[in-house]
Length: 440
Image (cartoon, rainbow, N blue to C red; front, side):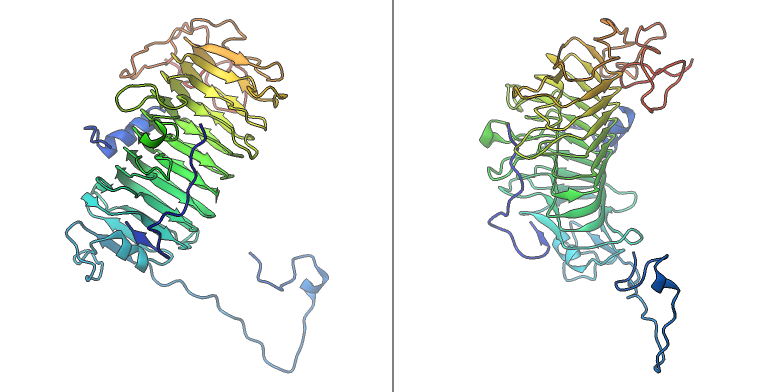
């Protein structure tokens, strides 16, 4: 189903505004799972223009305008037992992110002390522009682990709106009713890294997705775990692990989506997106184990706007309720290299369900077991397990708790059975699937 997109909520204020279930798995352990699984001045001539070599002489001395200096970066601290009347220093921390976000400037950092920060409503960072050399950082204090918890709220989530060069890392976000982490309103060059999002959903005016990028450019999501998100108002039909739409240049890598009521990764109306070394499993059920949303591991298109021109490489989908990898009527060609689908009812569906002509999707070196394959005639799916008649790839283990889960044995027919697509490999040729077998 179509995921709800961000909207202005009734409690919105101008500027910055503050507004999971406990699984027994720490943020550090959950992020470890993700890793393991996987400017010229206006009016100046350009070099080569005739005017670039001319010297203009006037009767007045000339001066060179100095760029506005960036103030020395500051570190602001927020603590559950702080006070917004404090200076925000290490020994006099603020009590709220609202107060810290009001103070930040390019190059500044906001550090959350370890423990649980219970907040009301949305936590918004709005119209803050860092630079490549002076980003704004929001993170747990060094050596500490902070959790932002929206428990018992009816709306809320961590939001980044119309910002540039912001780095959010080393945090846990729990029980956000709206979306766990939302990046939107033209934000650019935002990085979300080493974050765990769990238990989002409940606001009927939002999707309940764990991590949502919408209307952004060149953003990166890395080593993020998004799990057990559920939106009861739609019966679980909108809450994805990750949702990336209208966000060209987005890169999502080394991320894990599991136990979400709709899809693991959803690229609805997404163009020019890269998914790399991501894992999606057990998506499509509500918290009680009942069928809920679409239940795809990777949904790679859809919507009334163009979708596609995206690349998926070395990703894994297993035990999702309906499909591992689905083109979902993407209107532009998708590229899917070296992915593994195991124990999904359908492993790969690239059949342009709408009945129109299918874009020339390219699938190479993919591996499927215990799931159907559905591809249209216009799809270029040469050199995959189903075209090479590799019915039993010889996995070393199908136990998700094993370090050899979905790895290939030495005598697997999938070893060296692929074709060179530009990804690193060992041996005479690439292996099929996400996990390249290393030499003994």
